[in-house]
Image (cartoon, rainbow, N blue to C red; front, side, top):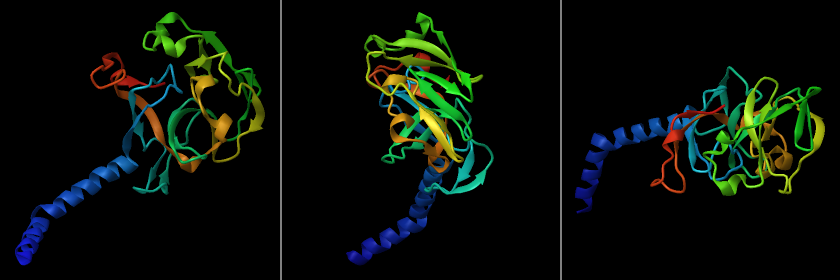
Length: 231
């Protein structure tokens, strides 16, 4: 009986097993080094990215890594100020998604939630109510919405004046190969103000679009957010 099962396993491996193994390696290598998605479990990037979004992560945005590792094989670009990136937290290795606010060489600081970069006070403009339509009332209650202009890169941010947070820091000079990451939901984000600067080799890739979105479960899709570009 054992000999018969051994023969069947050998035939299966020769016929289908090897092909299945190769297919799995190709699929996981693609996910590891080329493209992936990231599910959003919290509101730290609201109003840009909502809880329940699944975002597309372009792992070839800046470089090519050896599959299953963080080793860089080739490099053709660097994260820019304003990019939304996925990276591994320097605090606990958890995969996070935030916005690049400070790049190497920047002199950057914050006073009462207002950024200044390289001697320029960042501009903030009030946002109209239309930007609240996809955010639950609980999420923006007692919050203020603005457009933040990161020296040419505009994006929405939210502030919660009643929420305890770090609203001032610096100024600091961002060292080579390090980046300062902040959440767009500024007072409800655990970011570089808490865990420090992020090294270049911890950055997984750039988040470019919402693939699908759901409000609570897959039975409540937010179709208006499907394939929405991220800026």
